[in-house]
Length: 295
Image 1: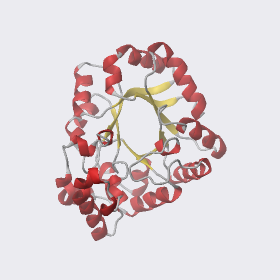
Image 2: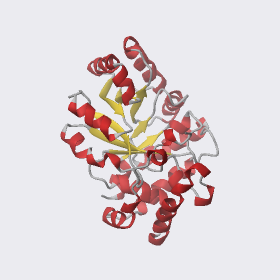
Image 3: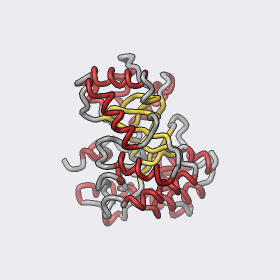
């Protein structure tokens, strides 16, 4: 996979545009003028997808304002959370207005639990798909068993977003089943909210057990002359069944560095990564799932 193909496979995560987000984020919200520059750079590099959510604070509105200002065209994926079935269409139209998108590339329920508790909400999302408000519908998932339950239940979905990183490879076993069912696979948390890029000495006390794994990734990257973000993202990008890799950035410089790092990553890197870093995979969900960290 060439550098342009790798970058084309990226989706830009936008939580930092509307929330103070990420364990390594010391800055807080990215200012709107800088968001504009980030989107311009992403578009110029060949990134053509944005990932957002109604729950990401002001992210949808910030994206919309910047897209109007820069004139770039992006495919947009958003997520619904706690929207009653009767309000789904109106909620989506509100999101379209905020993002200035003519229609969404995809809309996900923000969690499997929402679907389990209220299947009518997802049925309403399917109706919105029929109306042309979105091209794809599906779910943001956290556990492989959730994907297996959706497949076993023959639920109509064609897009999922799941966590995937050098530490979290739990979904690999279900990737083939999802692809066989025609489901597009987007992965997130390739940097584990920035944990995998932190100086090991700066890792919070509750996550210190990750330090040896972070050190291993960074030592491998230094030995190859690559950057740690390129190694982490490159691993996911080189996974054949993954369609998109969502990465977030805290500032313009981080995006530029990520793009440069990926461009410098040679083709055929996955076997070497597997051989050297495959043993870092974790099953401890208190470590690999950020929503568990505060517990």
